[in-house]
Length: 151
Image (tube, rainbow, N blue to C red; front, side, top):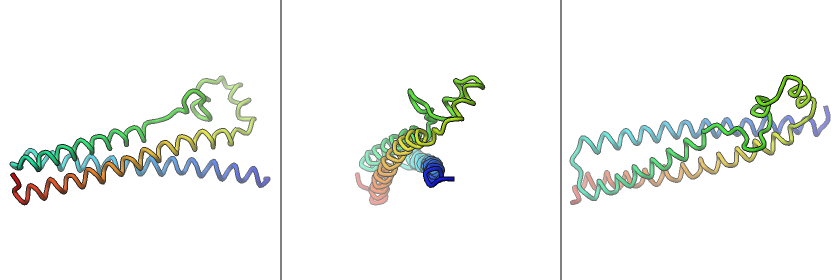
């Protein structure tokens, strides 16, 4: 095995692991966001809140919904777009074409395609985390206003 061969294998495994890690993080954050939305809904429907608390809470919930939408886009399956590489592309091939395709070392192309997908997922995850933090701050302000009885 040459250095380039082992480097390609390692890079291919690394980018696939990053995709899995990003999907796992997004899934956990999606569950957390759902719990925050459920909690906000429970409080909003069971307690009489001052108008200022309702306003901050409503904006917080809207931001949480935006974060949830970004997270859903993050974990949405991506089949590689117009030029799929690897698995999605194989679904369009005959058995002979698959053998021909697998006889070529396409790891570099797969690494490039998967890396672009991973970067997009990571950027969406970052934005969703920022939105979740912003929503949390807005909900804390709403809770403080409710506790203080602001009218």
